[in-house]
Amino acid sequence: MGASAAAGLQAVVARPYIISPTRMFTSTTTISGFNLKVAKQGLTNSSGIFSRQSLCERYPSASSKNCRVVTRAMSGETEKGTAYGLPIDLRGKRAFIAGVADDNGYGWAIAKALAAAGAEIIVGTWVPALNIFETSLRRGKFDESRRLPNGSLMEISKIYPLDAIYDTPEDVPEDVKTNKRYAGCSNWTVKEVAESVKNDFGSIDILVHSLANGPEVTKSLLETSRRGYLAAISASSYSFVSLLQHFLPIMNSGGASISLTYIASERTIPGYGGGMSSAKAALESDTRVLAFEAGRKGQIRVNTISAGPLGSRAAKAIGFIEKMIDYSYSNAPLQKELLADEVGNTAAFLVSPLASAVTGSVVYVDNGLNTMGFAIDSSTLAT
Image 1 (tube, rainbow, N blue to C red):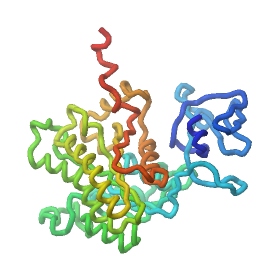
Image 2: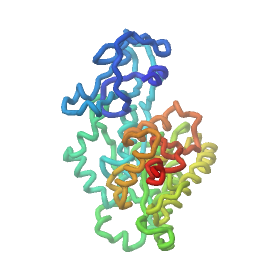
Image 3: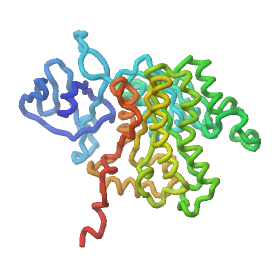
């Protein structure tokens, strides 16, 4: 909480966004110039900038063992109209997020964080998943997940069909064109989607790549075919190059682009196969090169987030995602569950003016697991 106060961030009671341990104070405390009047049930200051409420108080059914306090950073002004704090303010910005097809992955969490900061959201959804995604959204199945810290629901201005392994219509094989899963959809290659977004909105400020696929991910690298390996590279890393290549002309100067990578790019993760580790390594290398090229060409920043394991629907294709999550919990410096919202919050920072000098970086959001040299839960350490 001290760090939040020092930064001057507004903290309000909200749904899970940034989670910090519950603490109770019984006396007035000064943190970086803020005189905080504290009481048994919360934390406030004389100007009302800070307030805290435990989840146990909000949700009586929650066990006291797992009580947490919820805070969030937001832009705004005090009741007297004086600006304060260090806001993440994306009002007036428009974001295109490629790879949102449900409500439980990192792409969705990033969309919510950007929306909470004021950005307009448009998304690209894999063509075969488009119908079920739009239907679920329309029927309100995602309404609880859409809820933002201020109580409103995240709005998606438009959903575009997208298959980012095809750059132009000429690249699409005939068997894909005639596949019933693509029936009724048109203009879904990267070039066509970029053109459609330009026609509909004129420009964007933020480009998010939340795409990955390895058809042979369950195979070891020695068992991976050339076709499977190249398919992983195409869908998981070159798709980012293609997206930026086609969207850069319609990105406003000073904009930002981010992608999602994984520690397998630099560490051996047995079982994460099919060329996916190579694809993530390529993605990180491309991030540095694209940061230079897009920076010089359009003043666009390019970064990637190395996120820890999340039990999303897509991740279940790996086959042992729950074990990866358990391993991370047992061995990371911060022994807690990694939340998708924490990746979303980091993304919101990286695309905001607060990160105006950050580009070409791999930013780790994994509770610190990337820093570890060996597994502290190893049975060999008990002998």
